[in-house]
Image (cartoon, rainbow, N blue to C red; front, top):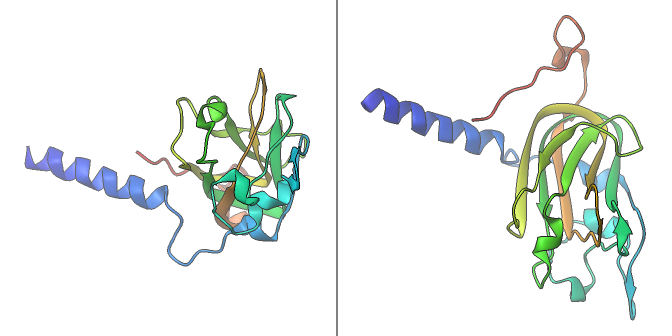
Length: 184
């Protein structure tokens, strides 16, 4: 029984470590270029894509620091990191003043294609918390996107953080494939 308890606790420590940004790590998204499927405006607030990487985690949309698309079919938001990285962690801060259910089904995608058709790192399968962390286990990509597939919806994000390391030959195995580190 002690061995089982030790393994469970060790697994929780690994999960917590793997799926959290390392202490002092730089948010790669801050130096990127953001875009989205459309821009929503309400009065003087225009919810441009770059508000998702401005470093401000204020989650009340009406304070003007969040992104927001129109009511689009398969809305998307994307950051171009400007070079390839092995992405370990993506943290999304959503809108807290309403509408968290709109993010249900949203996918975080990481890859080298600018068309948002990249591999899925994770999916929001239930109504999310204001902050959701995805462990991407070293997925290689220049682009990180959030896409709501298969339906018409508004997409709003208040901050997207991306953590990882530059993609180098050392991060790949002998066949040129990316090594994935599984988090339990």
